[in-house]
Picture (cartoon, rainbow, N blue to C red):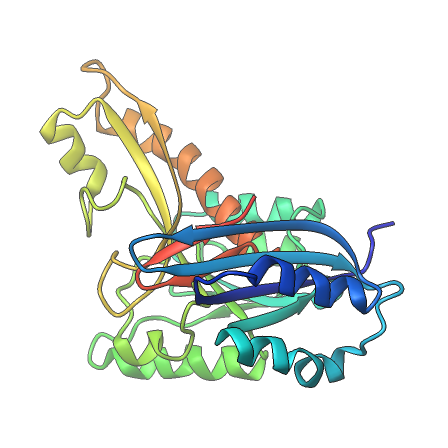
Length: 285
């Protein structure tokens, strides 16, 4: 059986004694540290750390952690977040017609690779309804209102709030979301873009890559921000292509990349391995 653990994510100005202060706090209260990793951004003079420890034997109840940790946090001017392994994120998936990323996520969820609940799948097309029903997940069809897109978005937001959604995954949801929508889920909405950003932003990147004669194509998973395809990057990967590959070949090879890159990003988010600062991320192994 998996151990019940707590994970502390910390961001603060870099200074002496940070690692010792955090480790000593955990150990002094009976915690057995399982993983600890840190990163220093020299340009920003910023320290980032992830510490995971067993809860068995840890003397501080979860509800009292903030009070107990406050002296350490205040001393070093820390921004921090505590996550528990037993708390499953409620994750919604938004999808359009392309179902390869959805199928991959649902398989990984069923196999136990993604530690989350998926209470709802939302789409602007009906093509993925059968797949959702096969996995026993409610499907909500919300067509895009051509006259006023905000009407459709409001319906989706209301649905996600009713389901108490923690994380939104855009599994090839082919709609540009408005800033009002994005603001509802800051750093809690993950997108897959079918190119190696910042190259080929926007629509039809494989077609433009083929026109440009590139030798590598890629996929990028990132947090969604108000600026299209410009959010903090979580994961990227590439595959080599040649002059023999046509657009259809790029599309097929790209689909494989998209599934892998998106699932990695979602898993790392669910495992509390990502810290965002500025427009960057640190992903702890």
